[in-house]
Image 1 (cartoon, helix red, strand yellow):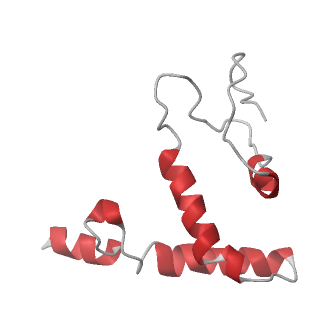
Image 2 (tube, rainbow, N blue to C red; image 1 turned 90 degrees about the horizontal axis):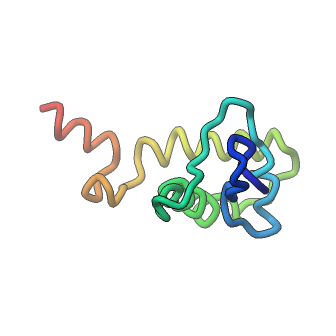
Amino acid sequence: MFCPLTKLGCPISRTSGRDRAAVSVYRPGSVFACGTENCYDDAVAESFFHTLKTEEVYFQQYATRAQARASIFEYIEVFYNRLRCHSTLGYLSPVEFVQKWAA
């Protein structure tokens, strides 16, 4: 798939067949990290999706899209954004990191 925002035809991401559904969700006005200046442009996003898949998605069998959406939403909003330790935050959860620096 190619970035529709540029005539260079840069790839949005390198994906396997099972990831193509996620890549096809382009929305007009979205900005993608296209270009050759920095090979790490999408490293954070790719790392997040790898974590999401290996910690949540691959262990579930979703009967419906609504069930998948609810499960992934709960993982991101309840666990990942609040409780999971992040290496970029010194292995603290986001809540612990905010409390540490707000005090």
